[in-house]
Length: 416
View: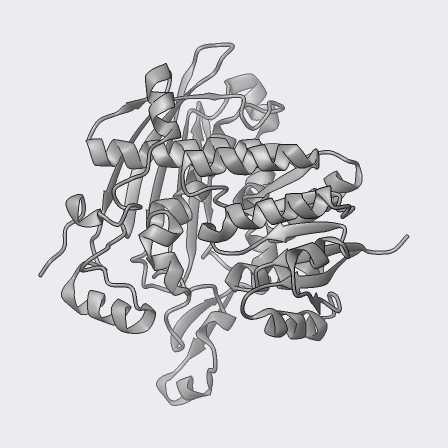
């Protein structure tokens, strides 16, 4: 039996990271890529790493006809069009076994609902790629604390944060193309982690029912004149005109449908963390027990003095989003594995081969989109959003935040 052939749509940062993850996955190869830019470079990377020949295709239809599954790693604003082209290829005879979409599923609830609808029309299994729920540390605490939870009860408070100094690509900074700022970019990770950590052992990922969301957003660094100027020069995005939030925090309240117990998940995200690079922090508090995770607590550190700093070609070779190339640096030897990318690929491929959805499917991605948009609505309207209210649910279906509309100046502070 030959390798399972993956095809990537998109060749940017996340596609490169997933390509590196394939080095740790058996029986899977990167067979092809379609992208408006960077396809040749991704193909070269794939060959250099020995994870597949990665042929460059000229259309999504051609890619779908030559792979076993496709993964959408293209920018948020292109997802709907791409998904429709995949569906068209399937209807025309492409024999793919599943469809993957990187987080977030949609920039709005309406957009995510459309993606789910198109996917259902293909009758194919889906995988929503939320890597942090596949992290070995998060899965490990679940198994380690299973017997304790059985006696003492489930975790009642989960906290999750993700922070770094800001995205690579210019479109990520543009709220009208990305769908917002850091809440859309990374809040989806942290909200999903909280939900998963709080979920009782052995229950589905959507077992707990979200009943309310309260959130705040802010523009604390990148709205200042110096940083606006730097951002405009580097990305072409003007936060003086169309700003996105660089800070978000909030609480999602869940209820156990069987016991009625209320539990809470607290999320915090920022594009302001200028320390050693990307930092993930998560913890969970149960009655008489707890767990704690910090991605920067690496077993490997290196020190580079001023005289040697010029020899460092790439600060990010040590850690994603690293902002320094000298001093005491944290090194993560295998970031794709640490962050869960390896395990989410394995899960998707194994599931598709069995003809079923992955651990997280598109419907789950839709639910995360709803929670993120409820957080935007809460921050914008300065109130707690009651998710048990049918009118609120209907309002969310057509809601587009002021920030995503390019009207962020109405809700974010700009220092002139």
